[in-house]
Length: 272
Image (cartoon, rainbow, N blue to C red; front, top):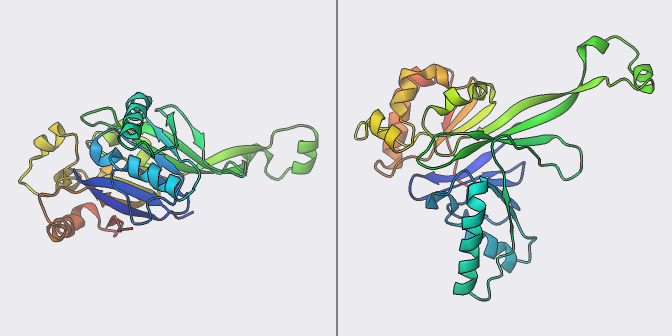
């Protein structure tokens, strides 16, 4: 299934991506124009430009009599963000801010489906940033007949209690959040992603590759030097620095395309 990802992701300003078909948000550093409509948020890390709009998001859903949302995040953020919510209730006594904060760490799994079909599986994965951070991978899972039973009487085998099916996963979407290019070394399976949404914070030489590493981000020049890092599926760049205006960023990526994108797989995040 092709997933549609739109939103806003500007370094230091705010990141929030909407996955339309799955009805989830990735980070909540800024509220989109319809940024209250989905009940689930996956938070990558605790920097303000990735969590700063959580209060508004929760309060807006409450004001509109929508069900309390569920916020999934690294377990280390649950306590501090619960404390922040409680502090805000003191600032605005009328703000109940109902929501559920759930620790969701690398090694955990979550089925998104509400109908019990178990088709969409979410897994956090490790990234490298200036603070604890993680990305999220979304797998589409189907039941597949095991190879050893192909051509046999499947109905009879089932009646005999034989488990003839196995789960087959397809990595439909991965979102890195903020990270260095080391994320590809840490998670080589990202090459299988049908769509990868990744930060490319720095695109010009006013910030060196070394400085990008120190800040916990990716520089476009790293991808030019190592185009094989990118998966063969669709790649969406986002989270650009404010040092360059959008036109300068677009021009830098067009210049880099012969090296990183000879097949036309790379695009920029579409606004929501």
